[in-house]
Amino acid sequence: MKKVKINKFDLVVALYIFGTITVNLMGAKVMPLGSAFGLTFNISVAIFLMPLLYTIIDVVSEIYGRERARSLVSSGLVTIVLLVLFMMLATNLPAAARFTAEPAYQEIFGISIRFGIASVIAFACGEILDVMVYSKIKKITHGKAIWLRNNISNCLGELVDSVIFIVIAFYSFGQSFGENALWLIGLVLPYWIAKCVMSFACTPLVYGGIAYMRKRNKVNTVDA
Image 1: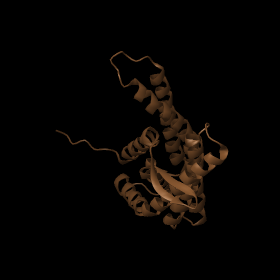
Image 2: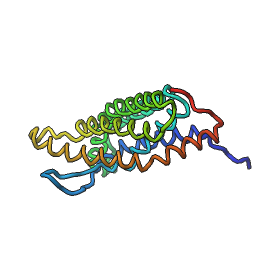
Image 3: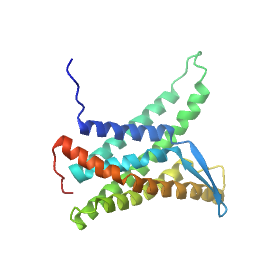
Image 4: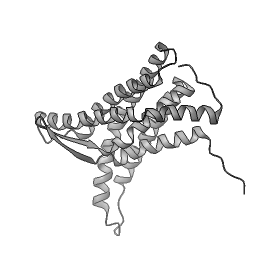
């Protein structure tokens, strides 16, 4: 039997799409981190996947150039839009009498629709900014200091992503602005800081991913 070989870029795209879908379906859950300065800090479980998405974008930008990275981001956005549209269809279709999980189904995927909308907007702004900043710093540093442009672009992109996503996804219209502000700040700050920490921790993965893609695909770095 002939051994099936997986194209490395196809694998990268698959991981990227996996991350975007999983973040939208399961990111509604938040974990408590504690409290300080009168704020209660919580963090979304999506934190475990968001750094992977930014790492993939930076690797693609480094190897294939800015336009290819933008194309991958756009593909991720299309995936999220299609996911949201299908969830809207699925939650509005009638359920069979023997499907007793309908209330839970509606509650879970109804929330995911809001998360999907929030993610489309936040994802577009955050990741496009990430690609733009990465490319600009790459030109300024003449292709050197990958760690610098990787982390600066990630932290800026993740800040924009976190603020937009959390405000749209978690704002409660049944509470006052002050209550919402405290709750949202308690989500945004630890979420963004944790993303930045994980971005620094994932820096070796960027170098490893770039080296791996160059070796396996026999391509040179494309100028942004």
